[in-house]
Image (cartoon, one colour):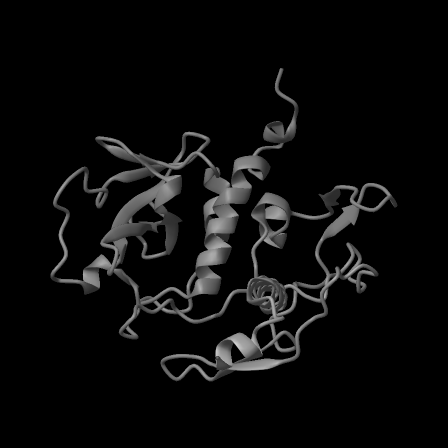
Length: 257
């Protein structure tokens, strides 16, 4: 028979298992190199290219067409670089030594207050619409449960009343509150800032923000538009409040016994 004569001395089982291992090795190589399109080539703490880049080579450029008319992105060569000239200094010449801030870390955006250079465009939903909007611009939305923070005073981490909540920013597809708008003055002068919802505690008569003090609110990063917030602006605002959990008070950096 044709099959018997052709495969008589050929081990099909051995060929199948070897083909599987070759396919699996190629798959690992492909997935690993595709995973290296962001963050590579690796760098040392001082910004120089690291001598050890790992066993896999950096992949060649690939250009992606961004949705909703936002142009193209070529990686790895066209990726956004790290921030330069950070106000930090190493505590030792040894590799991996911790860095300490040299200025105001909350304004410099370093340490716990650090932020990444994300896209300066608002996040969009699957239909190309802006995801996060002020509730004042959403007539179909209302507070259906829990405490409505609008109209409540805001108390900072030092116990000072620094303003009043005037609006909420809603993640429309998720139907979640992401930010609160605060008028940074009890009398309401129209000087507003945003507070991330996860840094607020809403009480019966106040909204408490413990991470920063009253003197820090005027330095909270602002948005370029009153109707939307970009990914970069989100990053900076969240980083500012997050950094305040350590840097708002020098005593917070001291050891706790």
